[in-house]
Image 1 (cartoon, rainbow, N blue to C red):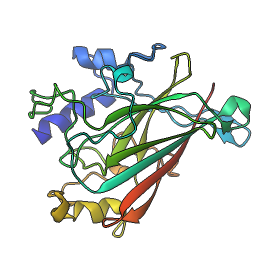
Image 2: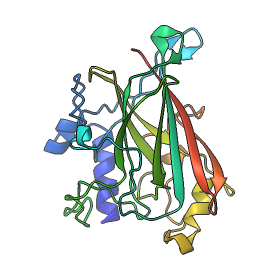
Image 3: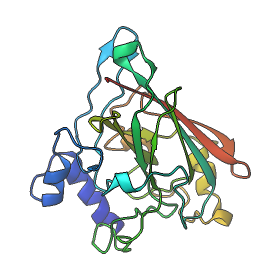
Image 4: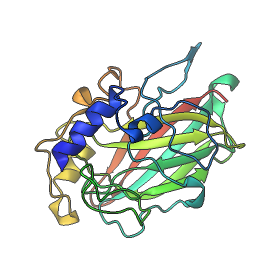
Amino acid sequence: MEQSRKKFLRHFLIGATTVPLIMEACKKDTVAATDSTTTTTTTTTTTSGSCTVTPTETGGPFPTITPSSLVRSDIRLDRTGVAFTINITITNKNNSCAALSGAIVDIWHCDKDGYYSEYGGTSMQTVDYTAVHFLRGRQTTDANGLVSFTSIFPGWYSGRATHIHVHIYNSAGTSLLITQISFPEGANSAVATVNASTANGYTKGMTGYTYNASDSVFTDDTTGAETGTVTGSVAAGYVLARTLTVSA
C-alpha cells in the first residue's frame, strides 16, 4: 500500500496526466469556497519589498471534498494522538503585510497512522475512510488575521514528510492560495519525539521517514520558508504557529 501511494505521489507531482484524478488536481482555475479540489504543482513566490507571498503547493491528492460543510475549530472527531493546536495567521501583501481579517482558511492533514478522511478503498489508501471527515476544518480569520484549530499531531506516510495542507480564500470565496506547512526536523524535534511516542499510538517511529530535504514538495525550500514553528511537549501537547501571506 505504502509503495503504491509513494508511486502515485511521485507521478502526481511531476505532472502526470494519465490519471483523471491528477488531471483534476492540476487545474489552476479560480474556485468557489465550496470547491477545494483545485491544486497547483508549481511553487511560486511573489515579493513586494520585504513582504513575500507564501509559496504555492499542490493541494492533492486528498483535498477536502466539501469544505463549506466543515466549519469548526476542533477537527479531531474520533482521531486520537498527541494534542496539537494549529495557529495560522494570514497577512496581505497588497496591504504591507497587514493582518487579513475575514479570510476563509481550510486545513486538512493525515491521522497518526498516515491516513486521510474522505478517501480510501483504493491502492493509494487501502483503509476506506470515504464516509468520515476527521482532521479537516474551516475557520474565518479574526481581526488579527488568526485562525486556530484543535487537532492531533499528524503522522506520516511513505514519500512525504510530516505536513499540513492549507487553502485560503477571500471573504467572497475566491481562492487566494493553496499551500502546505512543513515541520522542523532533527533528533529533538516534535516530529521525532511524537513518532517515538508509542504510548500515544505512534507506532512507525522514524524508520522509512522522508525528510523535508528529500520530500518532493519541500525539497526546493532551502531556506525553511514553508516551515512552521512548533513548541511544546508530548505531555503538554504541541502548538504550531505559521504566518501565510497572500495577495488580496
